Amino acid sequence: MANTYFSFKQFTIWQEQAAMKVTTDACLFGAWASEHIRAHASKGVGLTSPPRIADVGAGTGLLSLMIHQKNPDFLIEALEIDPLAAEQARQNISRAEAGVQVNVHTTDATNFSPVVPYDCIISNPPFYQNDLKAAEQRRSWAFHEETLTLSQLLAFIGKNLSSLGYFYLLLPIRREEDLEAILGTFELRLIDKLYVKTSPQHLPHRMLLAGRRIKKEPPLLKQHIEAQEICITDQSGQYSSAFTELLRDYYLAF
Image (cartoon, rainbow, N blue to C red):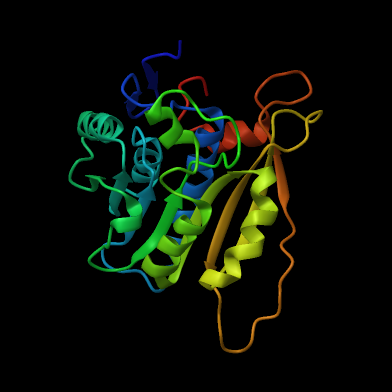
């Protein structure tokens, strides 16, 4: 049984009511995306005031709180279809005293329309497509494309991302071709890609992705994104220096 809570330096994620628990991959993604978002915000170009973020499929509120820690002035809308997970996220956010900046909506993202476009959209979506489904309905919602397909997520991003905004996704490697085949349909493109490996001996299993809208003028040639790699552990089985640096402000162990 997974732990009922996961403690970070500045907040705690309670997760007994959520089908999707805290994972190392999600923590890495949250830290990586938070740094990207902070760097983008420091340029101050094309942002609303205050900047607005959507966390699609927010689960326990993990990503929202990680982003809020590094970007405390941003307004974050956390969208979660599972009522129990959404209520858990509200409790986690309230206990972290972030309720003014982070608002949880119990909603199907495919039917949600924000008042104004978002400067950033982040998602750790349900990414299993044709795998054996979980017996329990809420676990299927969390892990399988029953309530939010990749196309629906990209459609949400294409509709609700500001013209100068950024989006961030955590996906398994095996969805890479699926993603790249349909990105252009929604006038989106990738600008950064980080492959995640458990150790130097393992093949990549996840990818952290950053993207933007396609610039129509001048005509954009298809760009090749040179992917970077990060290993969670090093040759000795300890957390790698790159992983430690990203999670230093979050993990109690660092």
